[in-house]
Amino acid sequence: MKQLKLFPKIFLYTLGIMLFIVVMTHGLIYLLAPRMQFDFGGSKDVTDNVIISINQAKFVADAVLRALPVSLSCSLLISVICSLLFSKAIAGPIKRISATTEQMMKLDHGANCPIHTKDEIGTLAQNINDLYCNLLSTIEHLEREKDAVRDMERAKADFLRAASHELKTPVTALNATLENMILGVGKYQDYAVYLPECKEMVEQLSGMIHEILEASKLNLTAEPPKPVDVPGLLAELCKPYQLIAATHQIPFSLDLPEQFPAMLPAGPFSKAVSNVLANAVAYTEAGKTVSVYMEGRSLVVENECDPIPVSEIRRLFEPFYRPDFSRSRDSGGNGLGLYIADTLLTAMNIPYSFAPMKSPPGMCFTIRL
Image 1 (cartoon, rainbow, N blue to C red):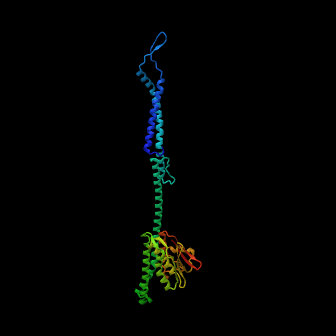
Image 2: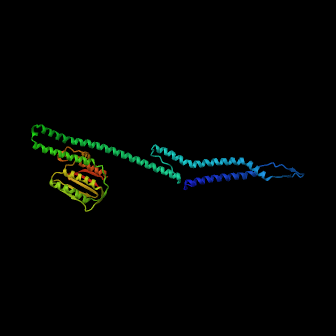
Image 3: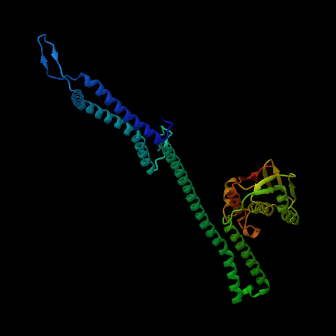
């Protein structure tokens, strides 16, 4: 019976009850009617024999009439009992589903509709369980999305505050220089000296604004992954930095396999690696080496320099952060290179690490593909 659908199950239950009632009723009539005692009346002859005259129709009618109250009472009792059992069998699962859905309304994670059959009621309970699991999963996903959006908004606010602070210093310096030139204060009367300085400060501001705009657009578009030949892509990315390194007398070592295919969004990956390479070349002194190579499925960028303390490394990925001992605006750093690399690699779900090296002393940036 558990394998049957709801309609045939109800039909069989009802048919069985009706047949049971009919059989029991007729059985009772059949059993009780012959046992009824009747006074037929008659005449007695000399031999004490009774001569009986019977009207058969009246006899049967009287017998059924006498048996009817008992038969009806028994049939009614049986019908009530069977109806109670039938109602319990049908209404019980529905009541349990109703009680469970009340728990689900309160988002009780332990709520689960019991499934005892494979008919429509069992399917309904299973569908409710699946729907509730999907609902909880959706709620958890929305909670994570809400937290991510909140973190993103907080990061944007922090970025804007940091950007405002970074722009404030050169703007103030430029404004002061121009004002002194206008007023003709002391040495600022020599326009031939200070106009080029003003132009240099304007170019610095323009570069910073460009970097800030680029950083602010990092999360606006998403490029789908596609097959990329990593060695070929890296060879192209390294060319300009090899020229810069040669200009500053920095040996640039490039060791890549012939082929290494990977599924990557080429644009964001290229920008992230470019920032890492630029960072490595910018903070390597003349005579020291920058090395780029593949180790297994990892891309490694090493540069010989004074190792950065571990306590400072995490802060290097904050926008505009530069340790006082090595990374100042005057040396060319704007504090956005590692921030952009971190943002892009995190968005692509590509793990990485940045750690100091002991021999030779320096820093190692590892991207695990």
